Length: 210
Image (cartoon, rainbow, N blue to C red; front, top):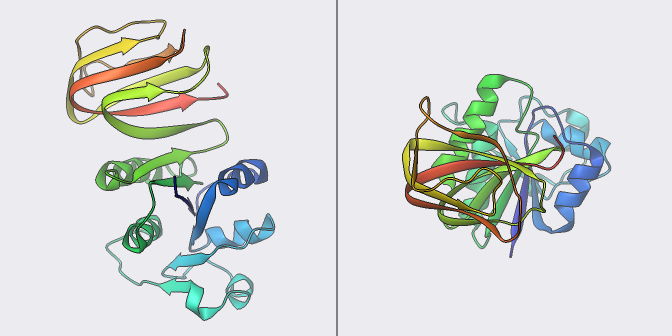
């Protein structure tokens, strides 16, 4: 599995979380000012992508110009620019977004929207110090340990025929829809645990540290 890490310019993850993500990554992209946090943690990005309106001159000075991807498109955020850069480069099975789950609420919703827009053959997950979020359809295996909290919500329309296995609060052929019915704070009871969706998509939140 080839993994790219995209660090966004929200409230940054801890150095430990960033280090753990980078251990399995073959590409590290910083969205604009996020490069300052990477430098403060002692990590050098492979690429800095964005309109370069928030990264400090000191950080840019330390990067070869060939690794600075300037994009002044005002219709896309720096995070979206970074995701599109990774997808255009190709060959990645997963993109991990860090620093995308806090700071401004509109940015959080925007990052969830990007997961929906770009998830496909390349899985996109949003991760922070407490857990991760990802979009799934069909049958999704939850590979976390027993006792882990997991929530899931229908996105982009209703999720029909939702059936769980190995969760404390089971669902059988359930119909989930935003504003109607969700599954919040369910718990993995046994392994293997899975969620099957006959039609539609769910966004999953796996909480490693409640």
